[in-house]
Image (tube, rainbow, N blue to C red):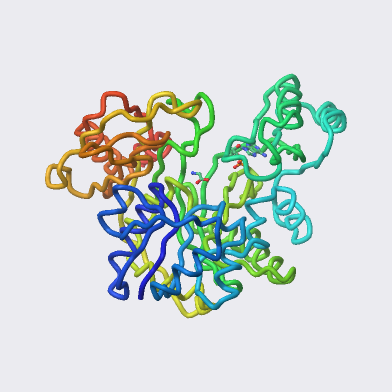
Length: 426
Ligand code: AMP
Ligand code: GLY
């Protein structure tokens, strides 16, 4: 089968590597890809906002499955355009992608299906939002509705911080995403990411991971797309997974189908594990980045088979199997990230044979400049390792980080600190 993968980050490099290992694969194309993906796929220039062009490409190249990595093309209805002409696609319709694209949509679904989540109010002007905040008190959470690249959320510890965030939203700091503001109850607990693969009806639990959103060690500083991750997250016990399936995931699948927008693709639940059970913080409609990079190396099954089964609506007969190993990723960033990353610094990677066993370096924001590999984005490299434990995987990942010659690059040195502490206790 010929496959077209859409995206250019570390997530897509991890997906590409896994798809490339499938015996069913003939040719893997990736639009636009990156220099790392180019090792395992044929990178192509294709304007994915022009759905007609994507359809033409698929027809000319006999594409049997389109896999969409990031959320933007999904929210933009690329899956609908492909399905309308009979091209199989792994990823939700625009209607179903509202689970990520609109916080208000997800909150309304939670209300209807009785899904545990933070109490909230929704406002279209600043005075009303501030009034609500005054009544509720701090800490409290302010969110711009819509996609704001993970930067539209303020966990305000004081009323003043909350007011400032509300003003930012309505003054257009997040563009159209801030036209509506969701004000949420502050949930206390530890966060975990939980992933399911879905075919419109069936949701099969995949696995868990934990991301590190803040740029600084000790979880300080501004939010980023994610500075590192590990999988599995042992805090998500089997009992908590079953509770999440029962109280959150299955009602979501039912509710979406009832609304005529069945969910296909990856359902990624951001959870807060509170004293009164798991609560939904948010949904994403695709794999996390960098969570995907720690999930793919642990997956025993053929990803292409699973994704095709999801696209064809036949997941209920499938099982998912995992290596008895942990994986961890350290994200290396360009200086200035997340405010404004400096592009162009030269990176020298070790040869594959010089890397410790179990290490893969996924490319995220890299580019080729002549013979040089250069930084071309905020998050640039994802150094991933497997190991018996998360602690072991991280030790190996940091050994590999130290072999990379990139004086300008930086990373957090404390990825996985919660899990390492838990493993020490055992
Ligand atoms: P989101 O973009 O909705 O995932 O929010 C980004 C981050 O803000 C989450 O990963 C949490 O760390 C934090 N957050 C969001 N909502 C809440 C909440 N209701 N209570 C506490 N923290 C939250
Ligand atoms: N790492 C967080 C995300 O992909 O949304």
